[in-house]
Image 1: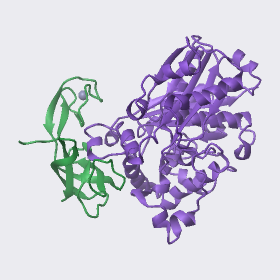
Image 2: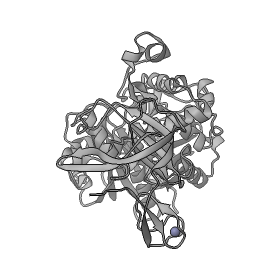
Image 3: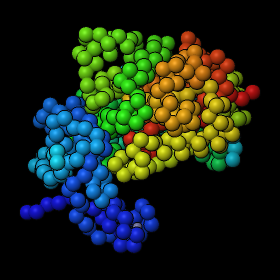
Length: 112
Length: 391
Ligand SMILES: [Zn+2]
């Protein structure tokens, strides 16, 4: 099964929302085309988080906000040893959290 | 609109409280009723965020109005995340200002130490976006960590500046008998000494343990009324003279400028404008310092200091008890504590004490105008209140 994280492009003003919203934030239109998002981007900021919700079975995770090549931003996990602001990153869809029997998939960024 | 006054106040210690949520919410209401001499109210608002999830208690306001013997007054529970308290005060303000009610009791309460710290943090994290933030493990501390890193890079805020907020607010809390943490701390102990890394471990880098507020139980209450009712209490007249509120995108990554908190700016400007005040008129402020960085950035967004200069004013002592604009005289969320649904009412309680001249050793001399910022989510729903001392 191919899974991807999608953006939602407004059919009227072309603005891409991520995540999905019912009405476009720019123009108020209500129809969107799902569009694949670029997997390449640059890291805007990040944190190494040590106090994790109980369902995480690791000591810490690294989270970041990435600006993708088309300007859309996303929050994601990082698998990068020494992250630096502004560094080039490459995303991959992976399991980011296991909640009960559900595997939650999301974007994980690696150094590029 | 009618003018709205404070007819009575009450508060519990912000700490761990081993009582049912309903009784925690009722306790400061009892104090406020006693102080005001009022036996009847028109309406009750109960501010709470986690009762349904953490304490198995829904419909809190209905339970509290009965517990206080105040039926058949109307009652509603207000949930607006960690800004529930100020939101409930805003609703109370509107009810009195509109002429609908003469006496409204607003109690904010939370009992979140019924679960462990990680569960409490996870509960608060449920206010982030479910699949664009929460599933990744995003928590409020992690959003604050990422926000702090941007400010360190852009405005040269340092770990020392952050620690200065904590040291100041822990110091103020030493004068507040209701504060959660009565623990004086020093820059030496949490930053410079050999033991600092152990005393003050990283939580969400660059934020450390002492950059984050504790998880608290607690409750606070204000009774809002017409001038006529308030005058009969014999207490100094404090008016809730301005309310403001603004929202922003739920996902932090969607903010136009991730260094800014426009909802704070919007809410603060509205409450000051309604009160007919300028930022420079404010004598004392309670800002939502769930994380040390927030006190600094909010102080800029409110117009007290220029953008990128809040940390410099802090370092000069301008926000200390004896400074030009004392901020978080109560100890703030950092040291007074953060029982989420109660926090906004607790901030207002401190401002009322200050404007009445009843703040004891932490009294700001001659304070006439007080101001609060209560922050729901990570800056995506912000309520600001302005209070003024009247003749
Ligand atoms: Zn559009």
